[in-house]
Length: 208
Image (cartoon, rainbow, N blue to C red; front, side):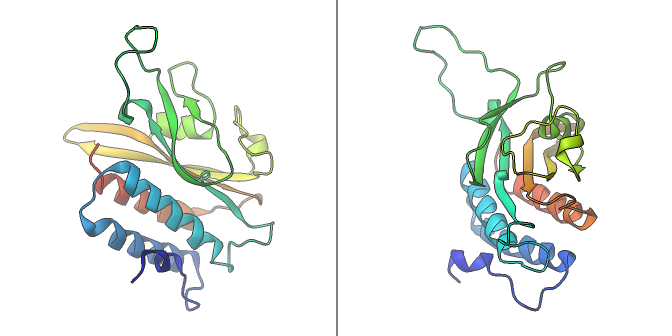
C-alpha cells in the first residue's frame, strides 16, 4: 500500500476509540520497516496523525469549528534539545551549553513556537507542564490555563502527551506530542488513551 494511503479513514469507523485504534495500526505498520531515527519516524507520525484527523469528519474535520490545526504547534512534537545534532563550537569559538528547553520537531500545520523553556523555575505552558510532570495534560479552554503559550490565537483547546522512555529504573522524558484544536473541549478521554498509545509506540520505534 502506498504510504499516503495510510491516512485514509474507512467510513465504517464511527467512534473516537475506533479511530485511534485504526491510526495506531497504520502507524505501527509504517514504523515497522526498521528505520529508527526519530526525525524520520516522528515526521511520518505527524503527517499520519494530521491527515487522519482531517479525514475523520465524525469528530474532526475542516469545517472550521472542529479542525485540529496542527500536528506539532497544531499537531506535532517538541523534543528536548539534547537529542538534536549540535556543534560543539559556536561561531565565536565558545563551547556551547544547551539550555533546558524543548525544540520544535516534526509537525504539520501553521508556523509554531520554536522552543519551550523547561528549566526548573522557568517552565510554563501546557507542553512544559506535561513534560515536567510526565503526565498527559488535557485543556478544554486554553484561555483559562495559567501560563498558556499562544502559538496560534485561534486555538481553543489542547492536549499534550509526554514522550517517556523507561530505561531500567530510570524514567526519561524525551519531549511531548502536542495537538491543538479550534473548538473548546476538542479532546476527551478517548483522545488521551489513543494518543498515549501512539506516544509510547513512537518512543519504542526510535533510537534516542
